[in-house]
Image 1 (tube, rainbow, N blue to C red):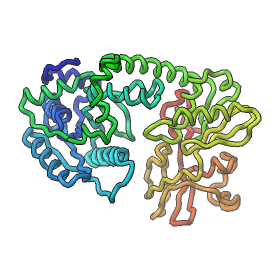
Image 2 (tube, one colour):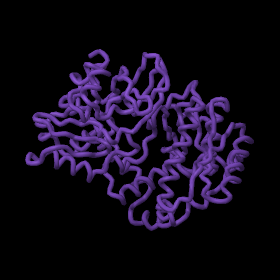
Image 3 (tube, helix red, strand yellow):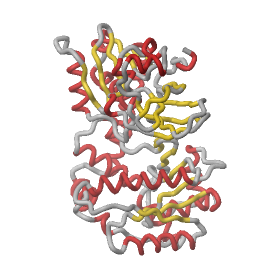
Image 4 (cartoon, rainbow, N blue to C red):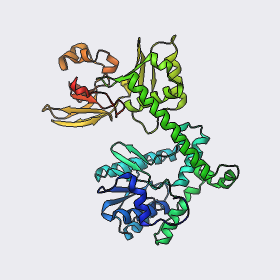
Length: 422
């Protein structure tokens, strides 16, 4: 669908088809530029105004940002689209501005989706953005997963992040706005040399003359995705054969099998395990994974290694991956007869009647106290460092009880039985 012709409502329907949006409400992240305004217009035409809600993030980084956000809201209202402004409140920022702004933007958007009970958030990234992403990752030395570029669908918590325009061009989205008199504003920071994308755009023509054309970059992305999918396939197959989840939320990995595993597959196995135990926006760096692999394969080294808030302990015939106790800091209030998700993977249920309780990590407790609170726990989970990361019920600094729980391994183990049945 790349080209320069404007998109029609029928084109939008075609672009949305893979995402099964029928009957669901969709949130739109709208900056006010031609990309997101074309998305807003086309989504309204394809799904109807009642099915969409636009969110505008005001980062508050420039004096005029508030007025600009209000103008975007006015433009969306004129299109018949309900729009809310989300404001980032922050102190003065001296470093990592781009990273912090991105994190804040996603946090505001996801929180707004949850409040509105919307489970799909649509972004307006297009094929030109994809080519730039691939080029930037190539410059940083990314592997196949990074060079594959942005995925058209990802999951953040319970919210689907959708990018339906990765096969459409920037020129098409601009032409769509012009063809249908959709107003848009231009953000001068997009061309600023302060950011990598702005610097790349200034040398785009020179790079193309050397062969780094948009088409070749996109083709590289497609081939990298094929390679990444193959590595993931074999890594998941390896996990099914040589790893198993445990009742206490850890994962055991066969040491002998790891020694025979190709390096690329082994690194992906580690990444999948660590992302399952402690989900983060980005997987561990390759250098860190290589260091972990070297440690685990070295027979002369003993003990444990840490990575991404997890510990990896060498045992006689297997490796044990589990959360590092000091890194488990999630605290959530819980009420009588309530079920909730804690730490992103524990399903916790409290069937008692005490109030003013919080779910947080058990920590290191004396045998006497544990046997009073949960007589069978030390037998079920004998190792203290693993046990310390389990969910527990607290009132202030007083340990009250161990709730009913089971760990969700995110579909990593197809044959894993529900530990609640153990």
